[in-house]
Amino acid sequence: MPTQIELSIASHAGILQILRPAIERFEQARRSSVQLTVLEWDTIWKDLVNIGIYKRGADVSEVGTTWIGSLISMNSLRAFTRAEIAQIGGERAFLPTAWQTTSLVGDVRVLAIPFLSDVRVIFYWRDMLEKAGVVEATAFSSFEGMEETLNRLKRVVSTPWAFSTDTSTHDTL
Image 1 (cartoon, rainbow, N blue to C red):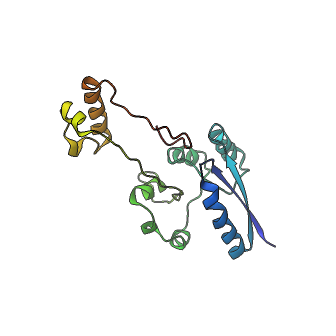
Image 2: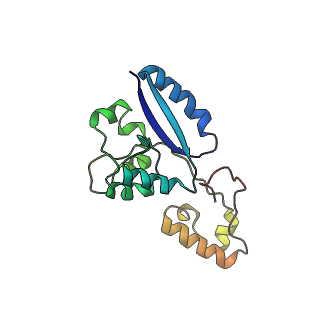
Image 3: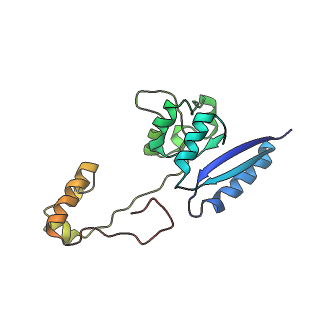
């Protein structure tokens, strides 16, 4: 008898076009069926908390990296075995910064697997950095450096921010 797996993911622009063929390949290879539930961003945290509290819902869920600690405290995540991690290519199959989100600091268990990785890009004008007295090489090299850079820019540039007009994702300012 085929097994059924319920997978919940957050609503992302374009993700279903990529995910559906992968799910179909998985279903054929494993003789399983996957019930895909797309959760909207305005309710996803509540939905995941309910899964954690009532122990009913998706078998596998996409969660935000900042939510992992709370889900661990609700005993909602189970550790992956070494064999499971090896089956997906191991730690080396992921970007190092993405892999750092798989467990809590000091905890050797792998409690999450990276699902998506995206890149953030900062565009800037060199003349504005120069006017603000900011060293370009270190302007955005750390969170603290970025904060200092933006504070300096605010003092000398009337509009130091530029905003994306892309509204297809909640990941963009």
